[in-house]
Image (cartoon, rainbow, N blue to C red; front, top):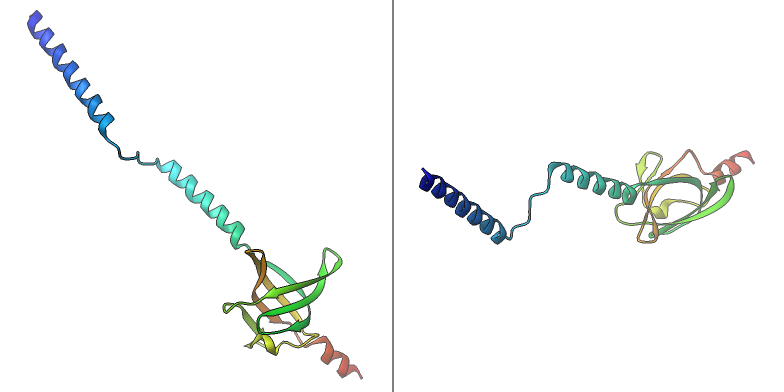
Length: 141
């Protein structure tokens, strides 16, 4: 009986030692827990939202060219002036139709959606609202 118990203890010891040695030899990284994956995705989403958040400004066009538009308006109750860079993805609409940025005239009342990207203020979309203030001034005369 003593021999059987001793043999069982010895077998358990050998099996435990072998399992421990085998576990030490594996070099693969452990799989992340499901909770960790969820946290990583939500953190990435939050970071992405900060980068991708768009802002808006409204005012009148001071000047426009193929690669930039200068808009004067008010920000927090104070006069402000913004220079928006344009890229190929920027949509410009005037009278409900797509136009080029060069078609914008000084005095056009605009709404601009933009993002800060690599230190630049890049316009995503520019919409001309109503008629230009220059045209309205001419009509009053």
